[in-house]
Length: 224
Image (cartoon, rainbow, N blue to C red; front, side, top):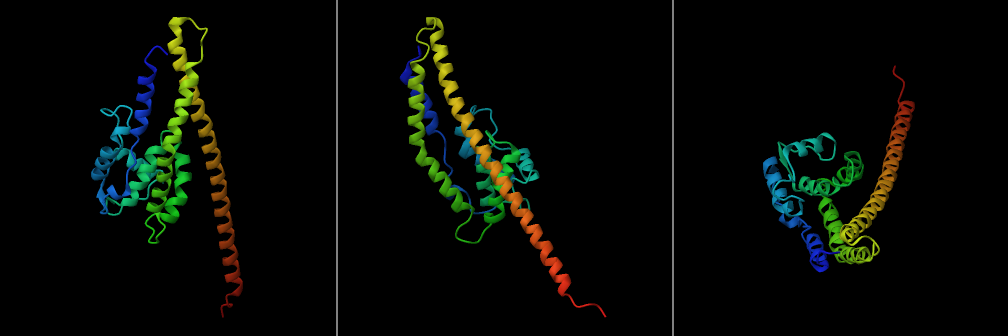
């Protein structure tokens, strides 16, 4: 590639370092109004935006749409808890690759069982666990990017000289895109399985409810 390889690669790797993990300890333990939530998210995730000076990290309209689509439990007296903020962070990362429906399927078991949970294992515990895994994987991801970059450098050796730089960058982008494409397919497949499991569980609960109701009616004393 005609551009200095080390400069380009270092720039890409530096962009990975700017992916910011929002520490739960930095999230206020008091309930926040919507404006305070959007300000907090903007402060913490602004560096991850493609166009930091223009992109909106989170808006009031977005929050309202998430609640409307059952991605986010409704606020209490117009205030959002720490758990609301944790869910919004999950949604922020998911929305770039998943549909609203897929995000809803993925987060519903979390909100059903762990949102505002008083037990020791709660939504914050889940957040810390999964984001801890992502931090551990950053070095692995960097190594993979470096390998793909070096492989792309070896492509199109016989192409016209004036086109080599573009074609090698194109090869690099295609390799990264294929990786994203395959992983997206895997994620969607897993979400489809989760949806089937959830539907089966709901059907079983409904059947059990009808069974109990029928038994209760059968055991009820006849009216005099």
